[in-house]
Image 1 (cartoon, one colour):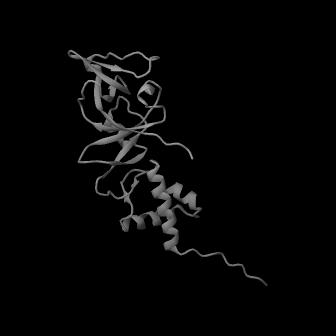
Image 2 (cartoon, rainbow, N blue to C red):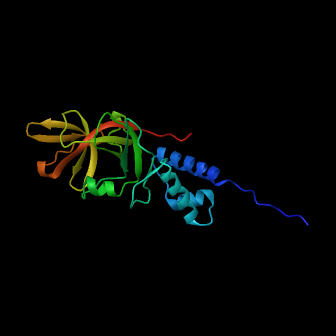
Image 3 (cartoon, rainbow, N blue to C red):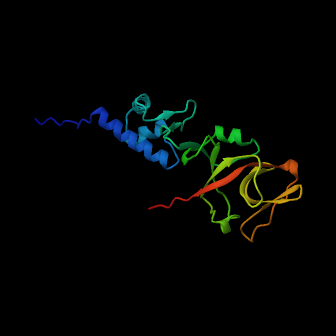
Length: 204
């Protein structure tokens, strides 16, 4: 009678594979949930995935933001800031959007700047090299200079445009002739920040 043995993988080896998987997903801007780790490694119980992740946090190889399903991040390295990646910003404002962030972006920072990432929707800024699906990194600031590309909240939606100051008013200009400038009233518009970086990811 033959006895077939199930190959045994040492826990440390499995944990290293879990770490590499989570690290890759974080760098791709979408940290996995515990359930996704379970499915990726075909663990029988979600608790097994949770135990591996908690051990990686205890070892200092991962950082967990409590209360967020996609809250795993890499420990901050000198000069690296992990900023929230937002799908969109609506009338609830920036704080509400950050609470529902999709993940975190590693960004090189020279100081204690407050930043966020935002996925680009629409084609109004193609002339500035900002395409649909790109990610813009935004430094939070309430004011910007004329000519800066900014993220502004107009009414109940955020928009990415080039800021033009006209006397006491502002205009938000697209970089695509198919779109017209937005000229909001002062009380309708809030500058959320200045675009400082654009990222684009291509499938290999």
